[in-house]
Length: 302
Image (tube, rainbow, N blue to C red):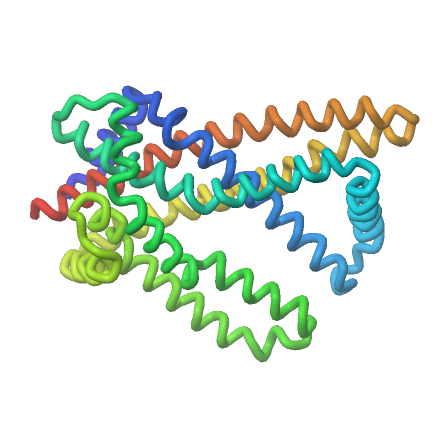
């Protein structure tokens, strides 16, 4: 397998077909970044609320923000209902839009790479083709994902305290290793579902067999896993940055009785940071999807 050739072709493909970023990557990236922001904010608030970290000042600030939100709903019921509907739509988009766009992206890349002429509207039609099967696969693998295991570990920490960490460290280390192995074995499951029209469980079996048969390609797959890990770390960094960009001007201008100006500036800075972070994540997502697609096609040909 020509590793450098695959990566170079994938990057060239991404640069030529930049419209893929806006059609199938930018909005899902925004949704994912916002979800990570909400998740990290919740985890931070939950941890500091336990007083294990000794961050009483931050707890006070976040507590006041929570109280302000609770007082906002009775005073502005129309806006509260609008925000509730917006939250429901965001939740639906979070669960349905990324699988749809990913399925369309994989098929569009594979077909165009094979020499077919397709438009972006054709890609939308491809997104419906294996949407339900891909959604079923996404829901199945989330239960054994590394993020799920980390969430369960944080739940144990918050519930039982740091003294329980030693007792559960062996269990969660074992689950982490199992999650890494399953993630590696299921590397090509989505491609069997989307490109080979296989069911969810047969695709997992076929992916595991493909990985085991080509075990000497493990170094290349580990490289791709590192790339995905870098993307996850970037998401976390963005998730930690955006709330401070929003809250920083608010707290600064509140001290000089110009809270409204701080709110406007914070929202503008947050939106700008969200767009550029999402665009960067979208570019990397299209590139990594092209790498995996080309690698899958080459392994299948062999």
